[in-house]
Length: 415
Image (cartoon, rainbow, N blue to C red; front, side, top):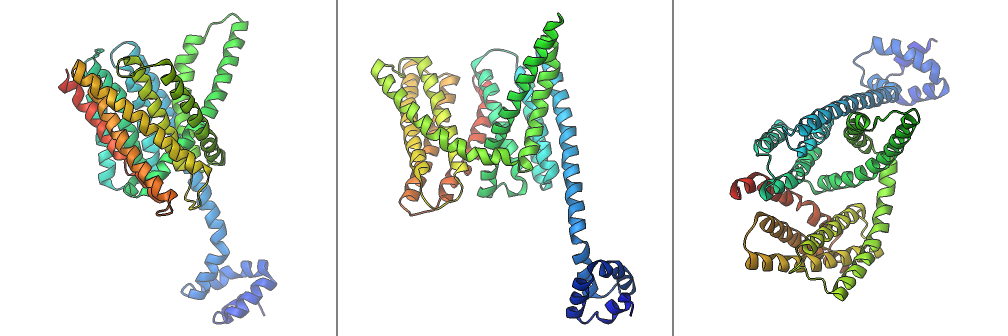
């Protein structure tokens, strides 16, 4: 009997259909189309249709999605490169501030996130309006080297970075695990971007030397039109690769965290001992106070990176104790810095720089206290690692609000 008829006759007999398929799978597949056409309403044949075609369709969809992502990445990378070059041109003419270069990269990374994970309209409108308002406001500021304006330039990228986090998290901006994924993305992005940038630097050095051999100096042209374009476009490419779960960055990031944390801890302990030994005083030495705050920010960055890469393992290990020691050390540094800033404010008066540094140190101090207490409870087996991660992820918007406050109000308050 024709296998077509056998399939139709055994529609109500799943066991027999399975036996026929296993006995002659190719013949079954060829004959199935006729049976499906004759019985399009059969739920049994509908299941078989999905079974026979699912793998092929899944691969097609995956390939199509990959091509779509790659195409969007390519277009955004080119636009980022062109935009950055145009912005540099106007910055060289002193028509706009050089800080505008951030608008040649960050909005396109945000566009990539939005394109591949479309958020609700209210989030989309918020992102677009805040990027536009930031760009408009920045270029309304006078091109003067006043402290309040320089502070606005320094804090704007922080605000835009938090805004980029909103684009990354999309509709899940309130979920801690999604915010943690954004922090992990940043660590992996930096590793991957640095790796590719080093390769680009080697290529640049080789190109310069090759043209030098034939008596041509292309350094200025090459850096303005190739290196700058490539640096901006590379940010979009790195975003794409990290988003596509490139294993290189994801595999190496935890190891870097485990290696750097103890090295930073040992280096800082030796440095602080040396500071005490030579008698450096952040209360009186302004430059040393600035470097002290730089150290604080570095320790905070390393600690956050280590926490985000530590995973959700309930089991304690040496890295957890190193992280806790780093947090305590950072808290000591911040407490000294805060005391020095309050002393300078009371002794020498209010300036935009002192107020800005005071504000960010208070924010960091509160964040460190929260993280330290969370780590203590974790080490005492009272909570899991998620409470530590929450102390980092839930605090991110606070930094964004402070950066926005400095950016948008300091040039008006201290003009």
